[in-house]
Image (tube, rainbow, N blue to C red; front, side):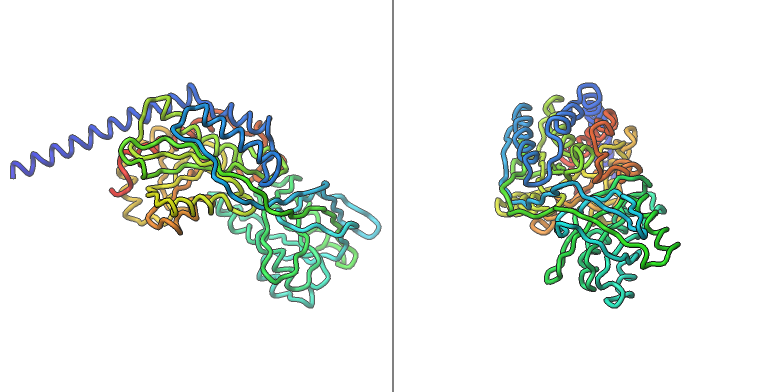
Length: 462
């Protein structure tokens, strides 16, 4: 019995010492990020010297070249490009749109949805049918929809505290709405921007055309314009209100691009990997600052912080700048394919693609109740002083999602910053460097570094 108690005391003492060491190390990471952090200035260069980076564009190609040089300059153990073929969609000339009320034309802000086709050269003019859900569209059917422009006006649900849930609920209109409308003979689709904000910024984003369904042009309309159009339809007789829009977007042949990868080799397990990444591409309306310049710069900063503080990880750590998250996900798919083909053992993958706002914690995809209980018991106290201690069930991210299909044992993790402002600027012309706060960005980089360190030291099998 005495021997058993002695062993328990030793184990308990060891756990206390380990937590104390972890606490000291995490403090070093935060000090480095907050005093000597470089991700903010790197983001400035990416946004101001390169700018928009839609897959297949000259900006995307330039960003690949610069990102590789950036990580080489940090002296990571290995920096390389991973070839991937990506879609090449171009917006063309600035879109035009009017509400037509009798002889009066009222200009409204719109933006073509990614991967949409263009309108005829003269544009499209048609009567409007307003719906607030795909079910309402189905209920109306072809007799009402045929020959019309469908106006998807389902609002962003303000009741969700985590705004990503509101985005997901409303997003089906943009992803699937245009194709669903086309099945009933619609000639075009306009979609209320997916945002809780009331403003005149149209929010672009991808739409997906269903196989075997006629493609129709589709655009996002700003929330203020959506409200105006809805009120006009409600107050006037329907035949008097028409809508006109013109866009010249098109999809060109796929082009060669690259994921950009930096790596620190593991001192004990070089073929076991922890990946942290974001996506290098962005929509073409602005600089892609929060979506997702902050994410890729934070990912590189994790490795830089390790080197700057002298921490040599047990497992190999990768920073991955994925290409083509916005309109095809080809970079994430390719990374997962090659990880499986190379027989790499991946412990975890962390994605940062929700903006560079104040860190709140992390979500663990498919995590059981017992796992969440254990991880909170072991690590919440270490992250709590930095207010990044919400360790909850939830999604990992689009780019790392394919890894679960090829490496089922991997844990997918999403970095969760404060979400309240993200969808005000997401996919808009307002997603610029000036809307990123330096300290928030650096706190996020430090929080991700801390989690990568804890996984590297202790694994995820509690």
